[in-house]
Length: 66
Image (cartoon, one colour):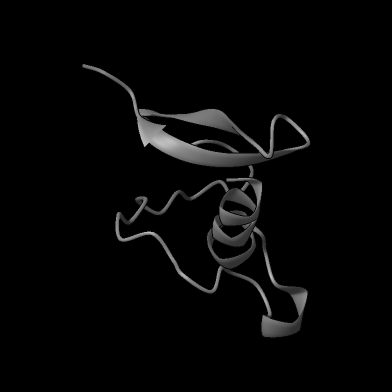
């Protein structure tokens, strides 16, 4: 189970510096562009997901409930 979780994190959540910015398997949902690079788009919030029993964390944007 740990190896499977690590492989998913390695291939989807971990940025690969050798590939440039971005992820090797990008998520399908597109986040709207924002004129201010360092602020969240309206209607979105940051969520944290623990990986490998809390050893690592992945962060992403999700739409807020209306």
